[in-house]
Structures are given as C-alpha cells and as structure tokens.
Amino acid sequence: LDAGMDEIQQGAFAKTLADWRRSNGRRPIQLIDQHNYSSVSNVVGVLISAKETAAGLECMFEMLPAGDPSADAVWLRVAGKLVTGLSIGYEAIKWEYVKAEGAEPWERTRIIKELRLMEVSVVIWPMNDSARTDVKALAEYLSKLNPDEMQEAVKQLTDEQRAAVRAAFVDSSALPETPKGKEPPAPDTPAAD
Image (tube, rainbow, N blue to C red; front, side, top):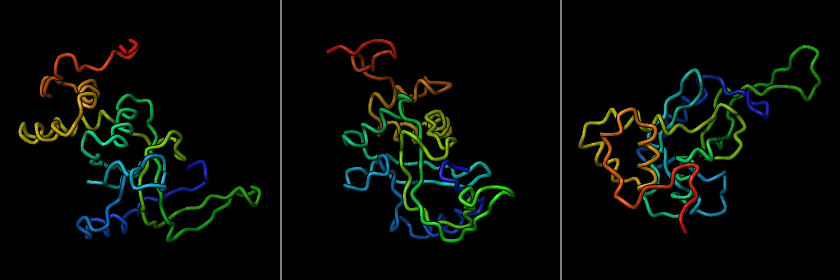
C-alpha cells in the first residue's frame, strides 16, 4: 500500500510487461529523473529486464553512456546512496475500491488489478517506501557474468560508478581498477578544489 492508498495486486504488471517484451524495443519503458517530463534530457535510461515478484516489480535499467550530464548526475546520487527511491508512472486499467468497515468514505484503498507501465523514475520520496534502488544488486548481476561480458559492462561505467559498484562487490578484484588520481573522495573527506 502506497501513500496514495493504491495497492498494486500481484499480476497487475503481467500484460504491460508482455506487451513491452513483444515490442522488441519499439515501446521502451524509460528511467526518468523525478517524473520530470518537461524535456527528453530527463530520460536517463531504459528498462532492459523486469520481473514481477510477490514483493513488487524488480527492474534493471541501462543508463545512458557515461558522459551524459543528466544520467551521470542521477547515477552519482544513486551510487552514493543520496537518492534511493523509485516510483512508477502508470495508467490504471482495471481496479476496484475497498473500504474497511467503519472507515470514513475517503479512507478507501484502490486495488489495482491491471496497469499500463509508462515509466519508472528515480525519486527523492517514493509513494511506496519499499520501492528502492539497489547498487548491490548490480554488483551481484555483474558477478554472474563471464569475464568478457563483465569487462564490456564495466567499460560503460564512469570511474565513480565503478567505485560505487566496487564498494558493493563481494569480490572487487574482478572489476577493473580505477586509474590512479581518479578515485572519488572517501565519504567523510572533503573534495579537493
């Protein structure tokens, strides 16, 4: 149940994810900075895998290549654990309202049985407090790749991104080293001007 009194029932994502998979990239689901639809520059990534679980929707996104200022700004905040919230933009297709006995008329929950997923956003305050980013999950994903796949995936990361993933990695020796002089400052160390 989120702060807006919506509860997404398990299975509500089934049709939208099936449609997305069938589209073969013609209908991408974007990762957006804070639901900001004012400019395409706020699109910082695209959904590459998703599965519905009892806990909700698990997603993985491909961020824009390193060097894009919008994507880099979002990634640095996520990797640094400054921003950890996720939120979805969706259209409810099938739903019903339920009200607990004795509750006021406005105290009702919308049970969403089917929805159309429009986008996922990195946000400061998610409507559902358990919707969070997980850099450690990325490290676990990378650890399952063969060495060539891992090297190719890691090439896409900036030095700061590599450092964040390295910090979450159980065995960081598998990741390429950050070049000397490019290490990010320690968390409690002020950055040099």
